Length: 75
Image (tube, rainbow, N blue to C red; front, side, top):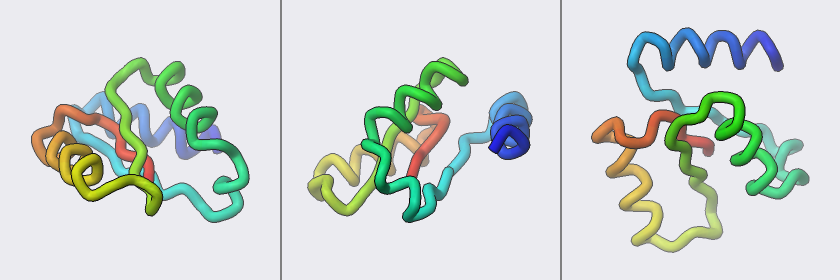
């Protein structure tokens, strides 16, 4: 996993936002733990999209990503 995190650091250093696809096995871990791990590691704006959120939240989350206000999007 460290290899992926280093690649992510390079992507973010270049000023590009990143989408991270979380495998189903990780679904067993609560989203708040995954969220806090990435937030502490990179200290930037992060959002999580999953099937349990409503359409309004999903819209604003994707809108923030498109405008590059959200630097990391976890899917």
